[in-house]
Image 1 (cartoon, helix red, strand yellow):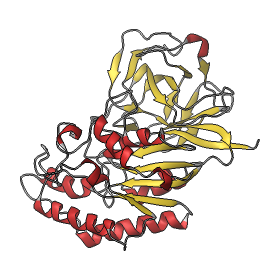
Image 2: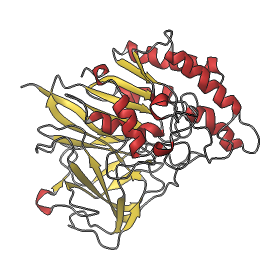
Image 3: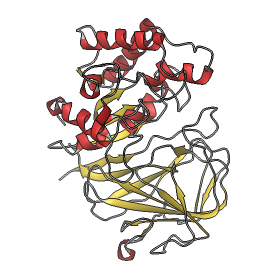
Length: 382
């Protein structure tokens, strides 16, 4: 059987030096950082990707280990393996770069929880990070990479350095990339349960799987939070090994974030024509790369608790863009009506109460399941 490297886990990363933050960025100094991840697919071997893409000083890693997770910050010692990089245990990741570990010759499977432990001996400065990691992580003093259970830990609600995991799988394995905002990343779903909409949809597939490159706060047309979609499509979609399909949800932050930032003054929002033009450019670029592109309507957010986010101008643009997406003139291969899947039946511009995560902007585990269940899996012919 001919094999190839296929992405089995991804985490979209953002710069700690932006003006806006979903959660506050941070750094580490002579600490072990231990973080869990769950694989969307399996293979006969794997490798890990670490990132210093947005760091402003070289990232020194004295030791890196990977093991199966037990619970919390615990690992199964018999599964603990040192990660090497061109045969070396100690590495320095240059500013702006990512590094890929040597192959770990051990079979892994879909749904397996792995734990990466990194000993960071120096001061990292503010780190490349993700706002919504798979689960709560941990930091502990000194080098505790091989410890079964960390001592003197602090919890981390943000993810750091881990960009992804690739598996050695059959060469014809095909995957989808979920590309967009917090509704994809899984903000406000339960940590450690893999309850985001892409994760729940991935478990419905007969073959292949979905990796997640959503960023909470991300926009189609404007940087912060994260590079805007049109800027990050190369790194976060086209460079993902095995990708054949792309699932997109974007627009909430383009329409709401300007008003939230400018409050109590009104924000400057994109027009309907500007947003449609951006989606068209995105679809055309993905089609040029030979990918199947599945778009989605913009989810409801009327009544959100974030002051300035919900404006009449934004609601008008959302309605016009969604009408265009539901019509026949859009450039996508298919559309999933995410908005309809979670809308209040009496107020279609609001999230249905049982799907509301509490802020009127995000969906909870049940809402993410409703979106996954509404998705036509035949569109994902992987």
